[in-house]
Length: 334
Image 1 (cartoon, rainbow, N blue to C red):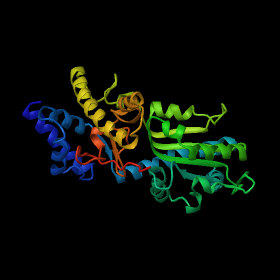
Image 2: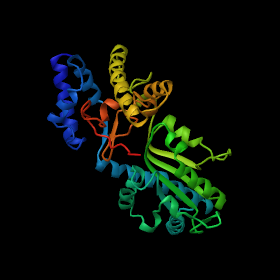
Image 3: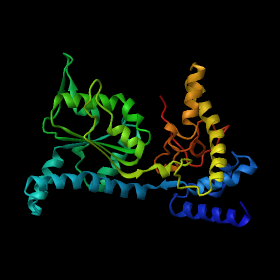
Image 4: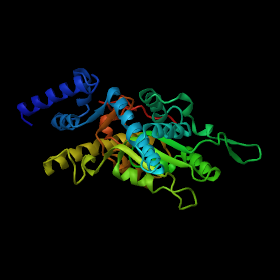
């Protein structure tokens, strides 16, 4: 990279920082992150950073409005119109919509401390939805002393799970809380509509969730799975159809750098969290996540957190002695 091109990228990062990145990448912080790399690698690191997508709080609130409008309201209104001979009568539509809304409950994906639940606060504010329509998974049913499960409220027809990002889709497959909740709901009420709506989703991750079934059954977990912004294969940083590189040689060079550091960083994390892990399994896990969880290879950060599906060299912050992140990730503590 010559001096003219380097100056252009620095100016681009400075502009992104002041307009979109909420001033999270001021010069001292940027230099601290660049010091993670060897001298000859810093230009490549700068190039990667200049391609990062960051969504601040204003953008996230706007996306949550779009999620409600396009992924919840529009389908409900279409159903109401179909049920009333394609009516355009505003009174009929509004009455039907309010009735459906009052029979809906919005639930965050994960426990109350995680991002899916955190977003419900903004989601409620931006769309002026009554507070009583937001619940935790355990508020939907009660486990009785004899071991049976019973719905707490019988006037619920629609459950909507809200999440920020579906990367690999594995969270839904392994999240026992969500799966247990849906499993119980399916048993308790036939015809109940269960939706999974998210701000962002990779094409692969969305398909995984769409095809996830109830335990021991071929019945799909969710009736609908939708994202406001679907990230296709071009968002996979080093993939065949990557939108970030026009030069194949440059892509392979930067991938090699990212993979080298990613293996080192994820290796430290695996060794800390799973000190007795089998050697072969350890290597497999490290290699599978060196370019982001589930090999998603994203260049994405959000106001409230950076997904672990993003390249680890962007977010790794679990050991300040070995790495300084550019966009911090607040990892879960198990």
